[in-house]
Image (cartoon, rainbow, N blue to C red; front, side, top):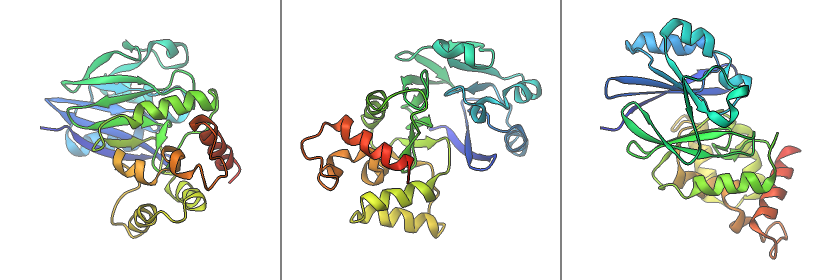
Length: 248
């Protein structure tokens, strides 16, 4: 049976994600303790593991309070351990860990930060991508460069299409407006935005197939011509789109 997935809204626009199955519960990122602990209590779940994607405060700041309340172990990228809370389980990109009894592939998605990782659980078709691949967008390049982020997005884009992409934030309004500004003829994009606005679907999670069809940062090939960049590389088209979004 696939793991049960529960999004938890935190802070202003963050997502944390709980997964439960095989007698265990895991949390992906820890922005705010109160809503996470309340969700655990409401479901009668005992938290076993906190998996961290990157070091930004709005993804790790609630770790001490949650660990104190639950005794959960903390997992994160060994290469970024100096900027993360103390790790009980240090993992490395390109390896596989076990989360809730399932294999979890650790994927390097550096770009937003150096050392950002995503967790892909293929048996349950879940990918926790935080601020790398996001709903209708991607994270700002605070530490990496366009080539690095494009390579990270390309790794994620090769996952199976039915994989649910679990973002770190609900930026659907801003990301959707930008997507329409560069991809106005995209019927799938307009339908997704209409469905989200009407409450027929959430901002996230969305399948990778949905992101491929509607996320401009995965559609550089389709947008190359409209940007006047017919002869440009994928990286250069991506860099142009990211620069446009930064000032949108």
